[in-house]
Image (cartoon, rainbow, N blue to C red):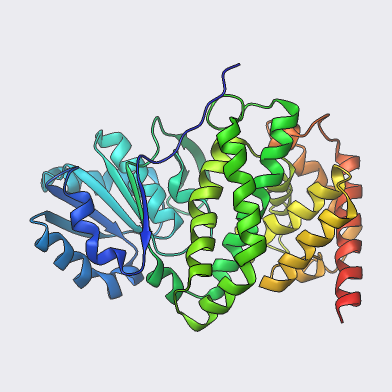
Length: 367
């Protein structure tokens, strides 16, 4: 099997980057459809209009309907075609960005992505998750290309709630350990081949950046200011993790996250918060050195990520619920089967309980 790496054509980040959007977008098209979260447009619309006007670009701004559904994509396509737009810009959170990527794909035009939070590594990926109009999962739309451009305004990200940055750290934290597992097992990644050395190096850099800068970045996020540490963590959460997970591969950490969605207790937690506990579970599952588990637990604790089931509000009938989570984590097609030697529900069940016990002990010793 071939080794494959894929990524956005261009990645840009910096404070107040939104004011320079027009300059960056001008080479791609003269007329743009801008799809934005209503909340984001509330504070960004005037800056977008000025940036486009200064660059001599035409734009049609449309508020995102709230769900990345086929009907919403079709509605936006009608607006774009009526306005003769030759490219799409998505600005906002995950579902808005997924909608923009899908819309551009169906129209056959370039797409630029401007995430306003750094809570996941999705902005750089060639994937859209499609839901029904009611918000139920419909399908994964695998796109032939990554976004043409990803532009991150780090001041906008700094202005968002700090918990969202922590969730992004939780999602990015898994990147190195899952890519490492896929490299060891020779698994096929989302890029359609084996992990490259470049993807593995980016995944490891992502982890080291979080260790060195994570706690400092959270302090900046809590104060809504941009610092070098915050810049580096935003890059790790968005780009390093984005390329790392797509071309490095997913394994147990994300499968455990998916398993946790099979019980209602943790539904109100962010994706990255559940992935963080999934990472601890993966480390137990692969019998990682205790020093490595301790380092990951310490990082999670320092930025406010959960390291016990109780911190995910799973407090009653724990063993019974962990049987359900373990079974769901090992469903056919789940990424846990990318682990060297695979994994069984019994092994995952044991790892979940031990990871929780380790987290409890860590918190007791910390106090």
